[in-house]
Image (cartoon, rainbow, N blue to C red; front, side, top):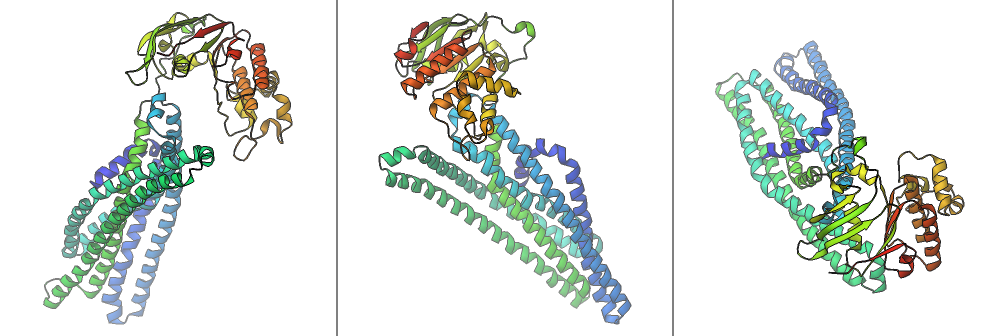
Length: 553
């Protein structure tokens, strides 16, 4: 069981440990030297008790005393250097893990996010990895040092006094058996606790997202009760997990104490009956060795218990890494990139649940440069058409063509270069205005960013801000109006210079005057581009050259 726990952790961290093999090797070489130094102190103490003190030999006493101090100094210095190396290495390993998790999340298909709550994913990348990082440094790396100490001390004890060493060796399988016996229920309890924590976080995130509605409808007490129920579930599960962990720890602690007492009884018997060459000094040294081994066993025990509690976290992060990333297709040759941007939907069918159709035998053709408005009631599939076209989802039947090829046959990154997309509620990153506009493309020169802002009539508002284009948005920065947000996203689309601009209810939250101004800017700046606009507004649709009415099935 314990080996399975370590193997699971290794599978998660192995790709990130690869680059740190030298640091880990040096750290554990220092640990080896320190353990040898630790073994030396009791050995010299035994010699002092058996030879220097009975003979009242001051010179010999000082020699042994200096040897003991040197042994302890070697152990102390090696431990300091080892901790310094392992602390930095551990943090760099988990920095790489967090970065890989964040990168993997951005590359997951849309249906992955439909299956997972946002709060849960944040908990995995942030809280779970932080817990694992502390666990790895404080317990796992320490338990590996503990295992090394146990192996070396048992070998040295067998070489020095084989009877006592054999006793120590025989107690270890009993310890391992007892340890494995406690792990299964602990792992299950820890998994339940983490699941309840995610449920609590999801409830809190739901309340924060709907705080305005809670205030308007005065649903504070109902929200309190709902959160209390979720928090109570987590509290009960966590108490059970902690109690099982404590019971496991105390059981192993009692066993560790027992194995340090028995050698005194055996040694005392051998001394009294003269059946073995065991001295008082040897017994005291062996008691110290067993206390070291007991401490090492305790480190291993705590490490395995903590690792058992952390198994759900490891599995949750493994799930993110193992979940297939979005298929991008093979890299395109230059000759494969289409010159035509004609769009055609051929008998496309789509259903979210596999039973209720949203689109059935849907047909649509859009010529290059055409301005098309998609209208229809809610649930008719207008936004679904945009998601299909941007390959967020795939049709169950039918074909979507760009030029003469089905869109699935294009390399995804190159395919998406043809598009820019403005949503009803545009997402504004919590960075500077410059970075928000530049996120539409790669390494945008500043003069192009300024030109795009001027073309959508946002430049004058920007230069009035405290730091101009370097002004931060959101959190510790400024807040933009909805009209300014839409202009910013249009500027982001402009720097991309797309062939096709997709708009999804992008003016629905604006007043009529701002809406007209943004539409004017839109048609002025995207004269050559194909525009497909989803809208409920007849006034907005009237500005487009082609209106497609979509009926709800």
